[in-house]
Structures are given as structure tokens and as C-alpha cells.
Length: 213
Image (spheres, rainbow, N blue to C red):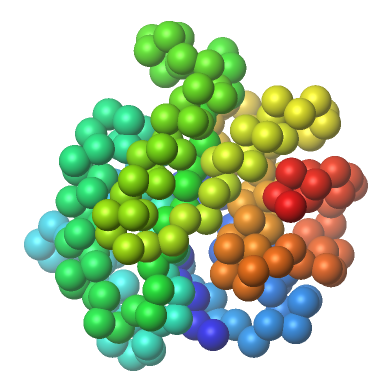
């Protein structure tokens, strides 16, 4: 199975695609994983003329039919400009859809309480996640894509009192545990169940996985 991640820093922090690949292989899945990412990238920006990152996506999809392409939008765009979010998905599907069996939307999460964006918009972390979830849900229905609900599970762990720190110090990006959670949710989305073996993630606590069931 060939899997391609397209996104930005929420994808490449802690080399999450590599964590996902290791997890899949540890559980006996025959996968080849690639990623094309750029910090702060909005999906529609990939389709600008002569964009080197999208040229890489086209190269990868020209050489290999992709079984699953996981798309991660800028973490604020579905809230600040949902039309641009939908336009980016539309352009990507039109451009490489013939060479991709299935698109999956990597749903992101709300900022951690105390983040500037939350204060400016009078939101809580969970409220922001709920808005993002609804935007992704509607986009998936419109575009006939699936959702990997990482954000929902991020919020469940955050408010569940487990003591696991999912956020980096910037109150936005994932700590390593957050990226491990993302890898597990992606695994469940693609393969239909949680991984049985997770030694490769080298976590000190497995409470995190209760919330991905």
C-alpha cells in the first residue's frame, strides 16, 4: 500500500509520517510512505504555478498510483476562510485524483487554552476543535473524502485529565505524544482498527490510546 502525506508542520513535526510507517510495519502492514510538507502551507498554495512542492507531489503520483493520500490543511484556514479550504481540496482532487484511490482529510485540533488565537476569538480549545471538526465533516461530504479525526481525539485526551502533554510550548504544534496520537488515528482510519503493537512509538504511557477507540 502506497500512502502519501501532503501538509505542513502539523504533519512533519516529530516526523509523524515516519512514526505512522513504523507503526504500520510493526503491525504487519506492507506500506510505502512518503510525504511532501512545508511550514504554514495552505493546500491551495500547492497549486500555484511552478511550486516546487507540488511538482514533487506530481512526480510521486506520476511514478506510483497512490492508495491513500492524506491531506492536512493549514490549522486555521477552515475557520478563517472555509471557501479557500474547499477550493484547495477541489484543485488537488482535479489535479491528481486520477492517480489516487482515496483521499483522507487529516483533521487538526484547536489551540491549547492560553493561546493568543483563542483569546482573540473568545474560544476555548475544545470549542475551536469542534468548529474545525464540523468544517472537515462538511468538506469530506462535499468532496467525497474520508476524515481521520485526529482533532477530535486530541480534544478528548486534552480534556480527559490523563496528564499526557500533547502540545509543544507554542500551544499549537504537537509534542511527540501528539504526533503519536495522530499516527494511531491515521492507522485506525486506514486499517479500520487500532494497532495491537506499539513498541516502536516508545511511549511511557498508553493511556493515550484509550481515546482513539
